[in-house]
Picture 1 (cartoon, rainbow, N blue to C red):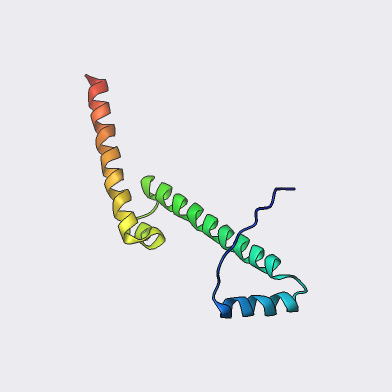
Picture 2: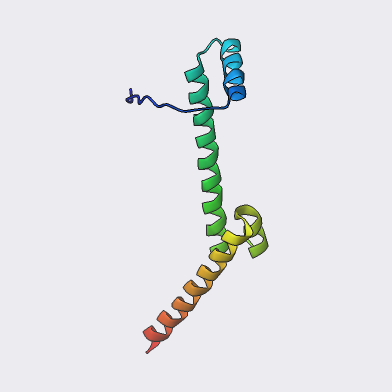
Length: 101
């Protein structure tokens, strides 16, 4: 079993009340409810990050359009990826030119 670390955090009263009610309804304690909620949140974030990585890879492989990428990861992030893709393509052409002599 992994080690445990005690943490101190402050939460809004309303959130604590809702947590306590849920704990009572599920025959759990407050800690169990908070751990479950945090675990679920981290799982969703991880899934979202994997989706972003797949979207970027698909765009770089010309399987997604720029507009589709912008929807998946946001326009500002998509713009950064687009610029990076252009730089990669340019460096590939330069490397091919050098290889040809």
